[in-house]
Structure formats: structure tokens, C-alpha cells
Image (cartoon, one colour):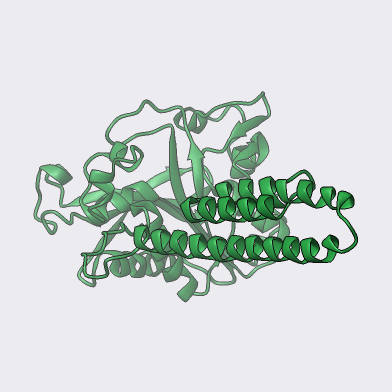
Length: 339
């Protein structure tokens, strides 16, 4: 038995020395020290020894077990350190290498201009309000003095969910909802997506964005409208910017006006961009029609107000010199990366 124990110890020493991974060490532990291992099999034979031999053989067997366990532990620790060193070497960072260029995102041109417009109006005491894009015919047309037979609906043809539900053609519907819910004084802008069944070209899209404004209070006049829009354009395009108002007709304002901006390309001298007029059409505006006020429960004998609607795409194109609206929607990073 002594020779067998010595043979087991020598064999274990050699195999432990040759082991190169944790799995092989676990196999050795099972082979020599488990309940069905070689050392356990030898210990089971101690029942056949005399009483004088058992203590000496037991002591030797325990010594062999202890040495194998110690060497297993030492070898395991050694392999773990080697693996850690290899992993550290493989994951080592060379801090002298140049860093990688990580592209930083930025606001889309439409969002950048919209944020700027919001800040301008917030500075003038306006609130920013929102409303549903899927609207009823009442809020989109009838409450704006456009009954079902009104010819102005032809220029605002939109997408119908059914006879009474549409995708809004302008955010004026938000103005109606606000006048129904609030009492004057009212100062709001209502930016958002709007829809019209227009063919896609350089200046038209079935989906675009509007920024509508509304002021209702006592003593509001057309000069207040002019001053508000003049300040907005000077903030957006520079202090030398000029606007002009031309008579027009909108069913929901009276009097109504088209607001033109001095051509930023020629400074009002006339060029192909402005068709040699010196100004480019920018937005529609006017004094809120008395019928619209009455329909929202506001007395037109006491209160007056103005409203306007600006195309976000149009002022963005003017701000950055963009000549095709479609560029704003195509998500081409070569284009967007310029802003």
C-alpha cells in the first residue's frame, strides 16, 4: 500500500506540473481526490491492514492527500494569475495612439429655427401651445368662418379620415381651441405639422410645418401685428430686415394681409429669386374676424386681436439659403452636416 501511495503522489506531481489550464486541474482533482478517485480507493483497502499498520498508512495517506490538495491550489492560483496577465496584455490600451473621432449630433435645421422662433416669442410674453393633428371639420374649417360650401376650402384640400375628421391643414385649429378654453388676454403661438394634398416639388409638400400666432386683448390693432412680425424678422434675419403688408383676403381675418420679406439675396433691388420685385412672400396675417371671435364666446365689441401663420420650412429655407424644400426631408447627412 505504501508503494501505491508513493506512486499516486509521484504521478499527481508530474501531471500537475504538466497541466496548463483550469479544466485539466479539475480533472486531476476528480481523478485523485473524489469519492471514486484513486486515493480514496487506496484508503478503502486499509480495512485489510493490521492494527499496527493502520496508523502509519493513515498518516501517509493524509500526507499524500494534503500535498496533492496544496499543489492543486498552488497550480490553480498560478494559472489564474497567468490568465489575468494574458487578458490584461490583450486589453491593454495604448494611450499614445490618436483618439477616434466621434461625430456629435446637432439639431435639424427645422428644429433649430423653430427653437429660435419659440425663444423670440417667449421673450415677448407668448405661450407655446399644441393641439391634435387629426381634427374635426369644425375646428379645421367651420370655426374659422369656412363653411362646407366656402371656396377657400379648395386651396386647403387635405386628407380625410371621414366626412367629419381630417388631417389639419393649419394650426389655426389650436387657436380656436385656445379661445374656447381661455379668456382674454391671449398670446400664443402654435407650431406643428400640417397636411395638404399638394404634389411634391421644390416648394410644396403634402406634409409641412406651420407656426401660427394669436393675440386677443382690448385695443389690439394692425400696428401691433406689424410690430410683432417686424421684430420677429429682425431677430431672425438681422436688424436691417424689412417687411411689408399687402392687402389680401382670408376668411378668418378682416382686414387680411400678405406679409412680404425684403429679398435677402438682393437686398430689395430685384433679382431672379424675388422675380425682380425686391420682396418675397412669406406669410399670411390679419385681424381676427368678428365671426370667429363670436363663435369662441369672445365679444368682438370689447376685444380685438390679430393672427398670423408662418411656414417653418419657408423661413428655414430663407435663413440658410436653401432652394429646395425636399432637402429638409431626405435625411442626407451630406446636406444636414452643413448646419
